[in-house]
Amino acid sequence: MNAAASRLAPSITTLIRMDHSHVLAIAHRYRVDASESKKRALVTNTCIAKQVHAQLEEEIFYPRMRDVLPGDEALQRSDGEHQQMKDLINELRERCAGSEPLDQSFDEKFMTLMRIFLHHIAEEETYILPAAERLLGTELSQLGAQMTRRRIELMKPYAGEMAKSAARSFPVGTATGAALLTAGAVALGAMLFSRNRNGRGFGGLQRIGSRRH
Ligand SMILES: [Fe+2]
Ligand SMILES: [Fe+2]
Image (cartoon, rainbow, N blue to C red; front, side, top):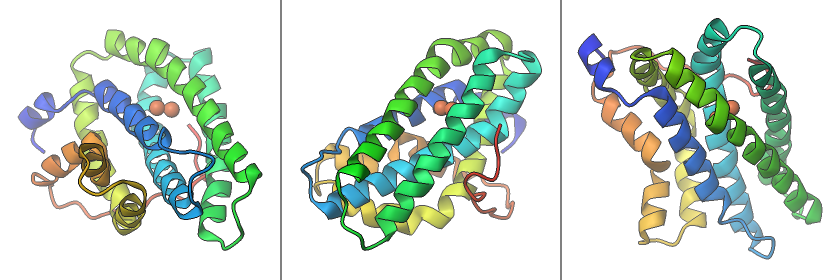
C-alpha cells in the first residue's frame, strides 16, 4: 500500500475497537444450554478472532505504545491479561478439537475467558486507545494499514476453519450471520485492502503463548 493509501486507512484504534465488538458479537451468542456442536463452533470462532487480535496488538500496537508511554502500568497489566487469555484459549481450543463431552467446566472456562476479556477491553478502550489518539496523531492510520496487511497474513490459515464453524453457529440468511461469516467488518476491511496487497509472502500465526508484549 502506498503512502497516500496508508493515510486514508482506518486508524489502528478504530480497528481495535471493531475487533472488540466483533469478538463480543460472536461470544454473546453462547448459551450454556446450546448444543455441543454450536458451542464448539462459537468458542472456536471467538478464540481465533481473539487470538489474531491479540497477536496484532502485540506485534504492531503495544510496542509503539511502550515507546510513547514507557513504564506505563496499564500496558504492563495488559501483558498479564493477554497471557491469561492465551492460556485459556489454548485449553478451550484443545477441548473443542477433542471428542470429550463438554461439561460445566467448559462453560466456566469460556466465561472466565470472557470476564478477563471484558475487563481487558475496558482498560484498552477507556485509557490505552485514548492515549494513543492523543500521542500518535497521523501515525494511527499508518499503523492501521500495517495492521490490516498483517491480519490478512494471520487469518489465511484459519479461513476454512472459521467458515466451517461460522456456518454451524449462525442461522443462514440473517444479516448478523452473513456479516459474521466473513469474520466481521474488520476482516471485510482487510479483504478490501488485500486488493492492494504488495506481494509480500504470507506468514503464519505465531504459536499462541510463544510471545508476550
Ligand atoms: Fe489487548
Ligand atoms: Fe484489544
